[in-house]
Length: 331
Length: 271
Image (spheres, rainbow over the protein chains, first blue to last red):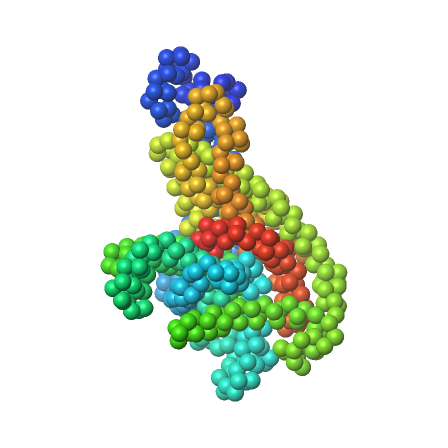
């Protein structure tokens, strides 16, 4: 990429000040003095060499494969045979008009996103408010609530397979013991609600992480604001509504943005938990792309799905940016 | 008064929601499957390490532990090295060229792994890097470079410019500025990034899933997933695997908690 412009000839052997601007004039002491006076804005060209390893790996193994995804998306490649056919926009037409599983995955993805964003933002804000003061108990509880974040998605998936197990799982057994046995249910076997139950797991997994962001934001609110509010004798709700909430809008924006991105990256959790089943009820875009490519060996078709995935994410990020800036303008 | 009670009740309930499943995982690993069916919540009546020997020796999870240690142990420092070098250059080179490079890396953070995994899989297969730990190290580095460069560049840009300029006028070569001045000063962000990478690389599932079919080459998350296919609802055995896979992170978390919070927050965007 850009590092191709790095003149390898100056690489480190010459005295660095001389290497500064690839040129003869830099050897003149006067030029050095002039540069020093002006505040030396030019950097040594050999600095580009520092970019070389990262940039070349990134181009070869990330940028080019990303572009290839676009190329594959207009083919019918199965991933194995040596030749493939270009089929134009057939894959995209199929996805748009003729693929109910794809539609299910898009809808599931949005339902999952909304569930997780709403619940996780609310919960992490409540936890942050409850643990705002740096007492010993608060510090300990913060550490406990943050803990799940360091576990692997596979571990969390195993734990919740047990919690949600229909026959002897924690959830159903607990409901029976407190006399609410009628509420016991198949949880992840419920085709309509399973995606929401997985949303709850995602919140369990990452709410503590977002709580930390909120605590940092809330602790930065100047104490004088609350003091003068106390002088005016405002209620607890008013304190929240007119000081805490508007003053933490940046933290809210960060939490909402991070949670949204995480909800699109929940591949590991869902894959390890249900694999997208039962009957595609918990399929989201990322699991569907994986299954299309590596279970059904439709590489071209899966690549078309991934191209749409990029646009869905782009669209949501854009819409969210707008909503957040409007929200920050209002509060 | 009532408010404080509600606050305490809320915290107690949430603590139970977090801790109950975790403690069940721990003590269930000392139970047999029959015991679990008979009494799902009960403490083990006759605690045994049978699950541990079955998992570590019988299932050879010890090999997978070793694979995870090797892959994580190599990919974390290499990612930090490459990302910090790139961040150093980006923070130091003025004008649009470095802004362009930085932007190109930033876009990488927004691209979900499932978008380029198919071409990546094809590429790694052609290069003979499937079923190889080297391949896993390489892909770990590639996919975490963007976030690494993002975190470190942000920090290095806050370092006073005069520092670099004085060094460069005094004839200090860039690599020494990098190694002796910038890296020591960037320690807070380097340690946060290292912790974040440690967790992400240790827990990585997607690429082992794609690239590894030989059980002897699998890292822990992939090996655990294969377990589930085999044991389905033998939770004592599955939980033993979960514990073994989590212990290194738990120990690190207890010892380095402050860094974990900083690291996982800096990298929260990666999920």
